[in-house]
Image (cartoon, rainbow, N blue to C red):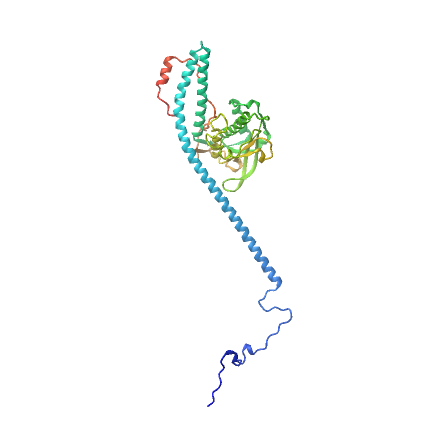
Length: 388
C-alpha cells in the first residue's frame, strides 16, 4: 500500500490558502517610506529636542554642583569659625585670669614708684629712675587693659546711624590717644558720601574697631618711614552675598593707607590674638576688631595695593549689612547681642542703654597727684586683692 509523502520542513510545506505568503507583495509609490519610519525633518526635530533636554540636564547638574560646593565651603567656614571661637574663649579666660593677677601688684608698684619719685625731689637722677619705673608700669597696665578688653564679653546695642557718625567717633578717639606718627598723617574722607550710607550697628563699638584699624595703619607707616603718609577712609553701599548666599545691601568701610603693605603669609594670622609684626604692641588691636565685626554679623577683608591698582599700601575693609536690611521699628527696644567666646546670644532688653564693654585700647589710669603718707601706704597694702 502506497503512503502519502510528508514534508520534512516548513520550506517544503505548501502554502496555506489565504495566508500572507500567498498574497502578492504590496507596491509603494516612489519616495514613500514604510509606516512608522521618520523622515529627515522629523528626525532633525527629535535630535534637536534631545539636545535641548541634555543641555538643560547639564545646566541643572552644574547648578547643583555649584550649590553643593558653596554649601560645603560655608560649612567649612562655619566649622572654622566655631573652632576659632572655642580657642579664643579658652585663651580669653586664661588671659583674663593672668591679667587680673598682674594688675593687682601693678597698682602697688605704681604707687610705690610715685611716692618714691616725690621723696627724691632733692635728687634728680634718682627721681628720673623712679619716673621711668612709673612709666613702665603704665605701659604694662595698658597691655593688661588690652588683654581684658579682648577677654571681656561684647554687648552690641544696634541702632541705625550713618557712616559719618562712625568715622567721626573713630577719629575723635584717635585724637585723644597717643598714636605714634599720627600728627604727620593726612586723613582723606568724603563726608557727603558718608552721610548717604546708613547701617545698623553699635556706633561706639564700630568706631572703636575702625579706630584700631586706622591706628594699625598709622603705626605701620611710622615704623617703615613711608615717604607718603596718607590714610583714606571710604564708606560705600553695595550688594554682597552673606552667609545664606543671598545678595543683600551692605555697607563697606575701608581704610586705605600708603604704607609697606601686608605680606601674604601675614594675612591669615593678622587677626589672631597676640600676633604682631611691629616692634611694640600687644597684637590685640586687630583681634578686637575681628570680635566686634563678628558680633555685628559682618566680616573683615584685607587686600594689598597691587590688588586694586594702587602703588603703595593696603586696604582693610569692614563689611556690614545696611540698615535697610535690618528691622528699624523705633517702638521696639534695641536688640542686644552678647558675644562671649564662641557663643552668641541674641535677645531684646529694655531699659537704660549699656555702655560699650570694649574700652579704647592703650588707655591707662592717670597717676595719683596727691602725696601719699605712710598710713595711706599701709592701708593700701593691707587691702584684699580685688577679684575683678
